[in-house]
Length: 295
Image (cartoon, rainbow, N blue to C red; front, top):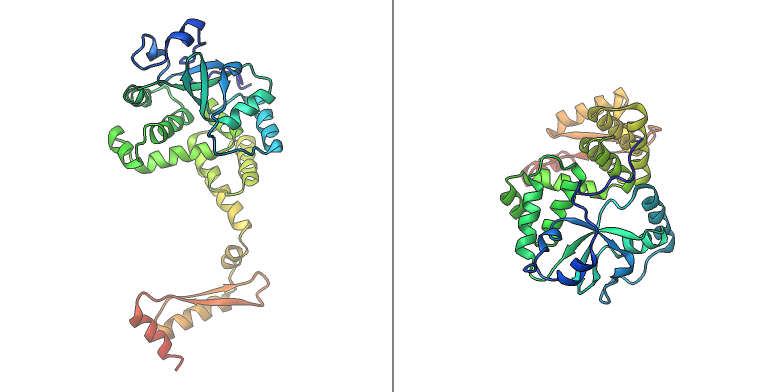
């Protein structure tokens, strides 16, 4: 059974002491390194929302669903707070904060921002990303923080870390998955490759269905990709029709292509009673050649 209480950050979490809450406010204060780049547990009683938060409406049903997920899985993505004396102001994650209160949590995992900590934070995050024991979700979260909190572009990040930009993009996309699926990646139940196959489905419900099939049938990544493709084809009538294009349509495609000296595609409805003909051309000359046959 998966350990649902497993802590984020693999040992980086720390309970804030009363002394550290009172004395550490700037990156130059003693003990600042315990905060910057690490995940700490902060009491909900010590956190307050940002008054300038542009988002003022939080859907109650969605909050309750998130609260239920938090009860079951914990918080997958820590919130980000700004240290303000012995209190903490929310920079990002107010929705997670509200849902955590509904779920009955007393503390939440958080990233802490201190005064003048930009350079220290960047160094901590870059060092963290080089570790070999990070799971795919932790890596994605670190990439996201470097982009959002440090202000790096994906191109900057690629150069700084010596990582391919595409791999960084694919990594961050994993954070679009539901908390349940992210947790399965973190626990090793499925791989990041499975996660990318699941992301090929736009509908969250289809993502959930594919995830369940992967787990139930122990599909490898290739099999998961094939299942994802099959599900997409099922949802696309035109693709299904193209896959079973009758022979007389195929023959018509070839005859037209020979006459027009151009690529021709016939798309037929599933019942074969209607459809359309698509003619390809690369430039004006090829278009003129096609049109000349109809004059």
